Image (cartoon, helix red, strand yellow):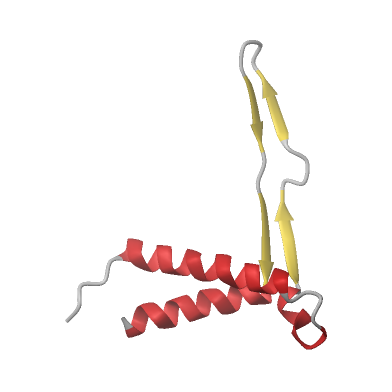
Length: 83
């Protein structure tokens, strides 16, 4: 039995999400593939700034989930199971 590490699965899933989102972005102008770019964005739209006098911290996080990134994640899980 192969020793499968959870970190390797996480890295493969993140690669799938990034590549799927990138492919979705590239195909947004193509008519029959534009559905890959359909998704939802959530998070902090305006960054949160904390001014401590000598130190200014700015926090912000926005996540965009698209059909392409979901398909990329599923493909990453399938690849991990096969390997």
